[in-house]
Length: 553
Ligand code: FAD
Image (cartoon, rainbow, N blue to C red; front, side):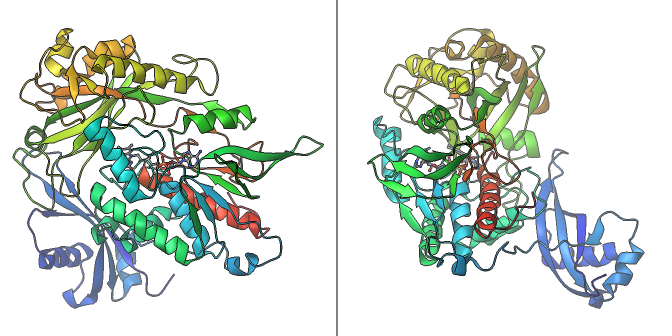
């Protein structure tokens, strides 16, 4: 055993409003050591437990250094809340990247897409000295912000520069929630968070259990990451839409990537291409499918955004308005299994935020949510979505889920009356099965605007039935949830990718060598953090391949 291990202490509970001395004392008491035996400690995780209304408590995971650690560990051998802290430091998988990159004939890896997956992939490749080229169809983040606001404020959509497309990817105009439930045995999530802190995120994201950074900070973080990648020899191409993946087919049928062709005809030669294009690159999915890249349809979810006054959610969760700034505006997570066999659940909940127009295609309406770091807006919002599956709901091959999404997004546009207004309905009217002709006290935050109507016109019948059953069930869990004036806006369709591009344990497409499908669009992530984690995984797979070393899975 390491003679000086850090001890990890979990489930340490303290009341709201305690100070650091109280935390220190709690550690000493739990470990049953003398106060001077505690040599130092850091908070690994800080969360709160609000399950008992009106009795919110703080819950800590602490990493501490104590005198005679092995003796203390032995004394707590039966206590699963006292263990040796794992080593979460990131170590590169190759250290000779810079030398590799100067070899004659070296082919720089190309990363398609500058979302969280592409950015983390490119950053790690650049840190290894491999000088990646990042190709992004949209614009630099500041210019993209102007285009995104043009949709929200003036009903003008730029199909290449919007909430989905451009530097920073889909999560740039978001709540910036930075947690994930993916399995992460190598602690890559920690690396992602550390890089985000280096790029300007608050340090607290390293330890609070449900961290978020808000949209404002994300914009400058993305710029910092770009500066770092460029300083390390990486290169960006913006307004560079990858139109075609160039593939060499050998006499025996084996396929290998040779580069990418951009919209202006320019070719970038490459033997390694990380494809991190997000879930909305429908044109690119179609081109890849036509060129024979193996992919399958996968399940996703569809539904609406719901808005309540944040105060209603706070009171339902905490028994009072936000009890403590450390705890912040309340969130929720709800699931209901409907009698028609469908799972209904809350998705991407944004406390104190706004509902945003998130389409990337003309003549369609898509909702999503975002917030600022302060989460101080009047309304809470979340997607309330219902699971849909290929074969049952959209048979017809890998691209059928996209056609399904497009259909309902178009219906939402029509029901909204054009100009990218979203159809909206109060919960009271939705449950009563009558169209809304006006809205109540809850003012919807979606811009450019909403049209009161009947949401049943832009959702499949089984989704409507499942939602009608779920809302009263959610009311029983969270008082006020089915309040008559709560507003539902539609439609929420871009919950995850409708397809998966198949890859092997070495990260490469199962039938196209040198292609590394990555992140949310390829079906390997769902959210900013998991997309970043997958980006690191694929960067390592590329680095090992360039170095001629096997990937250990
Ligand atoms: P993306 O972020 O989608 O990035 C893909 C990039 O590829 C884009 O920049 C796109 O322009 C580019 N691209 C696409 N096609 C091409 C092409 N042919 N050529 C060149 N470039 C191309 N997740 C969270 O974890 N927390 C949140 O709070 C959160 N809030 C969200 C709020 C909103 C409004 C939205 C839309 C999403 C939110 N998400 C959130 C989801 C999150 O943004 C995604 O899971 C994440 O961005 C996926 O990362 P990615 O890198 O795989 O893909």
